[in-house]
Length: 246
Image (tube, rainbow, N blue to C red):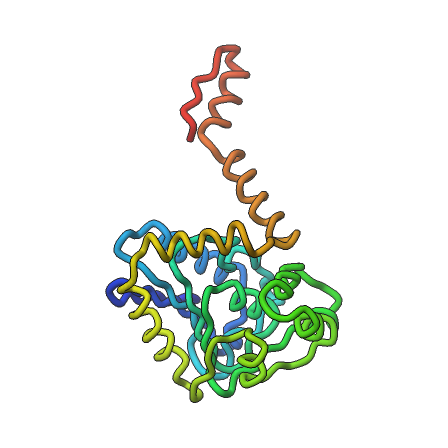
């Protein structure tokens, strides 16, 4: 079974978490697959908008799969992949733990009337830390209530506090996200890209966990580069290195 399904509808890419039997819990391979398909979305000139959703209405995701813990940052917009194109999240059912982080990092979010948001990590004794970014996206006291008191937030309150843009009848979140994506696909890409760049890179602050994940990717790119291999070979062969910047 594919853990992530991808459907391209003209300029719109729909990425669906696909393990409903486990509440679409994000495992290591699922996180890696989300990252891969979204990095491809970044590169494709014919694709203009992405929707991240999930199969079924029971859960968008129950969060990290404890049986196969992921490097969750890989699945997170602006961290594991950084498209300047708009990304919409369509949530049905439970959105738990790291699922809230994934959803809050998208540019827009719509949810079904039965959606519930729950961040239980203070009860579990472990956190990845990216939930700290919630305080820059909704009112501070409400974000702390969600993160510290582990309160469940229903769809209607999620809309009131600005966590989601719109609540629709249960089962219709993806349809509404498609509608928005169609509108965005007809707008000027350069303008959308620059607005998003300014917001994500210059206005919204990055939390320590986000910065660490991005820094780690940059360092990994250097470690895995052809230039590093050339540098090691040149050192061993006692010759000047021939670096190519790749």
